[in-house]
Image 1 (cartoon, rainbow, N blue to C red):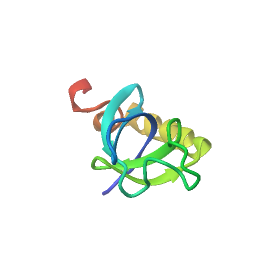
Image 2: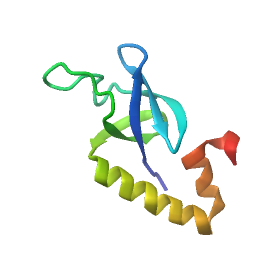
Image 3: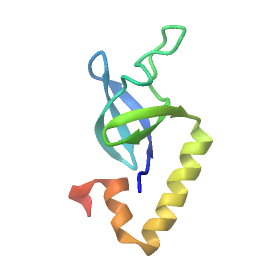
Image 4: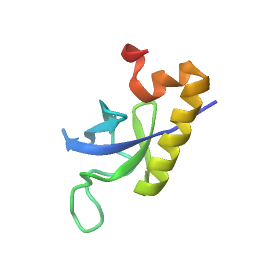
Length: 92
């Protein structure tokens, strides 16, 4: 099963790389597919993306991101392996 995790862009590192916060854990994520700036040239800081295997696959709105994180947290309550997706392998 493939799953995307919502994360919020908090820092632009290079032309295609950003730091994205997922449940308080900051991860480096490739933004090649969504771009580091929007169509008007503004940086995507604060925007939400759906992250899968280190890549931002698409932009999502905040409500969808928060709803998805809540659903994943509920899954974590009954299936602890979901914690690695939310909080990283080092926090299992």
